[in-house]
Image 1 (cartoon, helix red, strand yellow):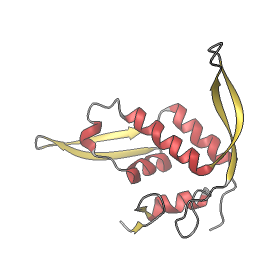
Image 2: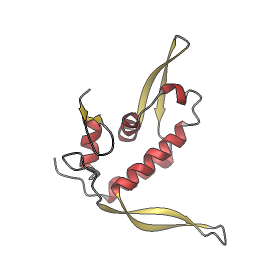
Image 3: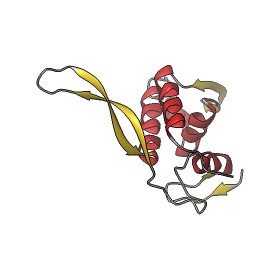
Length: 136
């Protein structure tokens, strides 16, 4: 695996190319603060009601939100801590929407077939449709 150094973390070239095409990093691996319009849930503290509103944010904030959602989703997997997933693995899962992870417990090998839940997949689709992809 060829590693690319970015302002965020070292990552494989496929993840770096994906983030570049989505306008989240530039061709030198620097974080780009391009603006996108996304839907967010906002809770009224007085009434407790939640409504969806459109807000402007940057692509990088969306990436960070998606990584956190994936961490929360995977946190319920019984062997999550043992899998030792790094940020590059989470980016691969976001990019491919599935990931097979090999790990060992007490000398026995296991493979976890990880996939994204519908909420995260929908959020990625919304993000993809709100950005203008960078040219190759």
